[in-house]
Length: 474
Ligand code: ADP
Ligand code: MG
Image (cartoon, rainbow, N blue to C red; front, side, top):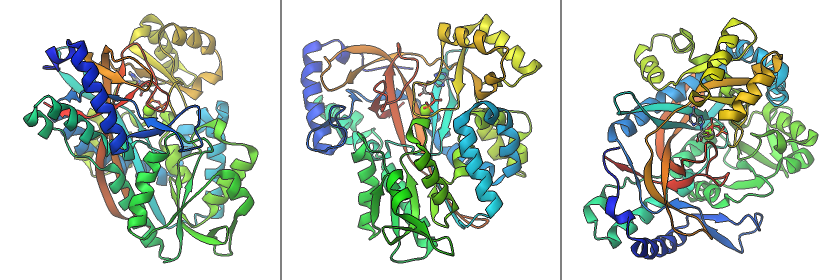
């Protein structure tokens, strides 16, 4: 990218002083995580890792990512309503991937019984990297879309003040003013509030499905706080508590501890290890209810990597978004190369190409949460092993995005201040609400920039690899 913070990154002493100031400001602003030693308590907390400087992002790509977000919202919503598409797309995957199969089972059960839910709420985050094209210019390419537990909207609201502070200390007032304001948690909360209102029961609550060990509690609280400011009460419960204390009445209204639930907001339930048998039962109970699930099971399935790959096939976007050629073009422009590994010629060819040029591909299983993808030699070994087995259909192959690295300082509790080569990933938060067939809200509500050292192929902030950042538009 055009320029960077140049000489500022050379002066070690100044960097250390700036880092001290930045960390204190981050703590004061509430850019917080619980510690890995005490993930269940807020007695001792620390700052969420972040970059010392905002990272340069071309304004045009930022605008493009914002402009396509409503299209992605519509697309996810369309996929979630298209049972035939989901069934066909996931058929080979669910034969070999137990987690997706279980989600799909619940989806089928709910369809069979009839969907009680009439209001639908999507809170998603579409993630991108800036592919360095042949002529050197960066191009926006989607990494994935998160349709469940898309996080860091709360902390991302608080980091602009930290980077403005750093630039102000350096008397870079003009630069400080260029840091965009950002408030995803407010927008996410407005979506929940709209769904709550349409559910139409003044005393009903929002139920946040929480993990036992939640280091990222302050990110979630930001949304809870926004809701409480609108007199909407949130209760936090684990799946276990739902199976013990949750029930449906004859109209399939959901009650927990005797209180009616209008909206269920999942910040758990996206990884296999988060489900015991009891938790699967709780998930089914929630899905059968008429409460607004965020996401409902079909929307969670719409966020699988297999769906992402099938959406890139010729004609798929046109089929799902008929009569919307402009939206289709905007969406398709962000797609990287995505390849099915289903048994057959097409999959064989994809595997052969990846084995011939491993550095150009990423192998992805149907997992969320970071650290699951395979690259390089690991990918080669896995592909060789999977090649002749139907198990390969539980993976997809993706073109590896290669952004141009730049220098920044990553600040983490307990780590020395160091300038490293980095790459960034931009996420845009989207919110939509549908009542029956009518889309009553469709917006983008802010962004998240995460930056990591280039030696880490995979992993987000929660996985301890990436750190929070802000785009510095250029
Ligand atoms: P998850 O659901 O685990 O977050 P992602 O698809 O977002 O899965 O991949 C995790 C991380 O791996 C991303 O944040 C990104 O850093 C890296 N990654 C994923 N896909 C690609 C790709 N096609 N090219 C380069 N890096 C990728
Ligand atoms: Mg991701």
